[in-house]
Image 1: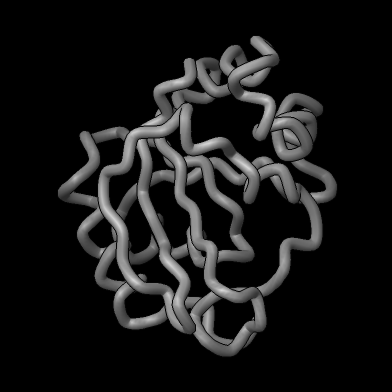
Image 2 (image 1 turned 135 degrees about the vertical axis):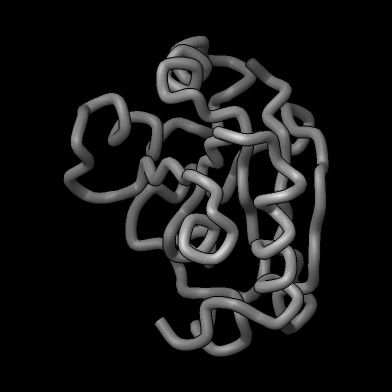
Length: 139
């Protein structure tokens, strides 16, 4: 995976524990650095992107999260899982500059329309990219 976090992204993840409410759940793609939200920031993360997730709903969400404004099932699953936040990183996915690597599955996680999100915090994630924490407002 190379360097998954830039210094700025690491600082963002460290701040997340104090910027998000207690018990917050963040939807993330483990290929872009969000996996560190739990271990570094103490914030729970929902990963609907594994090839064999624990339930069919998670697999479906990983393939359809970008339909948040048009498909009510997206919001149903997010509500069931208590996920109200989203983590994104648009850095070049080269595994070297803090951008992680290209997702192997769940590509819809990288295409969530910003019109259904409220920006909370962001930081440079290397090579001109930005990692960001968002509140999901589309549900």
